[in-house]
Length: 496
Ligand SMILES: [Zn+2]
Image 1 (cartoon, rainbow, N blue to C red):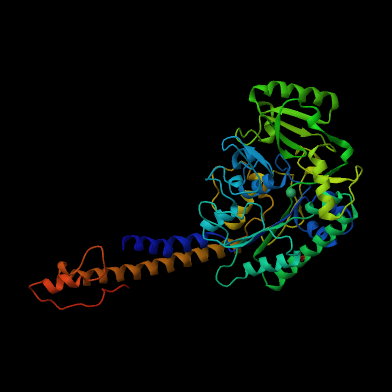
Image 2: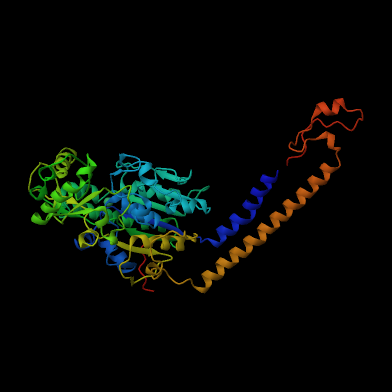
């Protein structure tokens, strides 16, 4: 009974108070994989361009190295670099567990205390909806998104919007946080190249999807509660197969390759040959100027890429427009998957290069009830976003974050007087109601205990609420027999 009592107090007092302290806001985070800033200049994003003018935007964001999909989505979701969350690539070798990782539970579980924003939202009393977001397929400390859609490219853009709006308007578990992932323009840009007409057409479709999202928000009368953050994980550049470096012709020793263009781990089969392999690569790097080579100790600090278990003893990084021999196999795969004629002069889309390069930078703009209009902020780091998400959702900020809160606070409107007053009214009402509920429960408990004390002790066991009939039958005194259990009892642009 004691534990039941504790849960009742928790339910009646802390959760309502916490939810009251939390905002009534809804946050939608939309990630358009590999959307680069230049796409806004192609004349096919009329709605989005108007939206950006009226939003808070930055010229770009500083993403993490490598500029690959899984590391960056997990940094957006956790507020830390790959050193801490452990997702050092889309695939890599783990030296502690001695096996390579692709997309898997282990990839996203390096330190148990670091959890994605959708988990923090869940444990704080909210409901999260995860639409195909990388890493959202798995439990974290036994918890998952209330609403979830696994990766499924056959679900079209408008269907995804309809599904997340259904989560937000769900009668029993309305989502206050939605992570909406779109695999394009990345998916098609790898095959056709970012400069292609196919990508221009696709960017136009994404513009229509964005417009549809705001149309649905308006239809549901949620404009006063919804803030939408639009972003990407990285940009995109291109290379031709004539610029591929065949590492097998440079390295004369036996090695294993992990990762893919333009970042690879080189792992010697015989660890004693590490120095010789590094020397071979270093000489080729200096003579060709087509890639750089690093021992783990030489990796630039600005990359936050020193994870000793998940970064190889040697890391090679191609210069922009260059790649490695794995691109030949990738091109053959695109040939089948996208019906493209294999050609050494085709331009294939590539990302993963140094995050200081302009073409690798992601986009950022935000619009909605908590976001300033007609506002531009200086470029900031993707790991800063976690502070923004916590502020909008009213969540407690973890102490392990690696971003800078000050970089993103200029995105938010200052809380106006009416809004602040409204929040305190809700909080006060919640405390009063919770106190009344607890008082009623306490009175109920007192009555229950008093009634129980009137029954001779031999008639009940302390740990059970059911009378032991055997004791009654064997008793010499004859108290009333109980055969039933004891009681259990402006000119502001309107995008929506
Ligand atoms: Zn990506």
